[in-house]
Image (cartoon, rainbow, N blue to C red; front, side, top):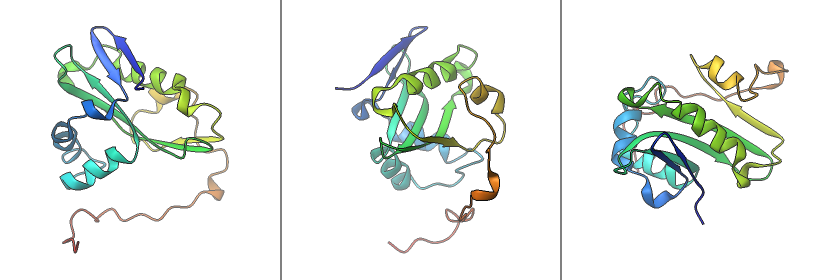
Length: 151
């Protein structure tokens, strides 16, 4: 059964049937962290994550918060956005409250995210800089969406 929350006339829901892949792709393909991402990759990422859509009363999707997780020990928060005309209504905070209270995300040992500019927002929900950054490593491919695909 999908979880949902109402905030200021908007619906936040983890129901995958409500997700508008085209709307999510339109935003992500032009944002700084996923510029050029192909639509099929967006669709696959939504299918394989806990995706929280943010919808107007008319069910137009205007935001997203996606959690990549095993639902037991680890989660990674990503693709958090609210379209410009809908900002300033507390929707990002509502999405983070929804995620923090989500029954499938309780008892996790680690919850991570990467952000270039929203540290203050995430700090309000308990996120801090890495306590031991020397232990963390990454394998990045920032040009993956710019190269020809062979699938």
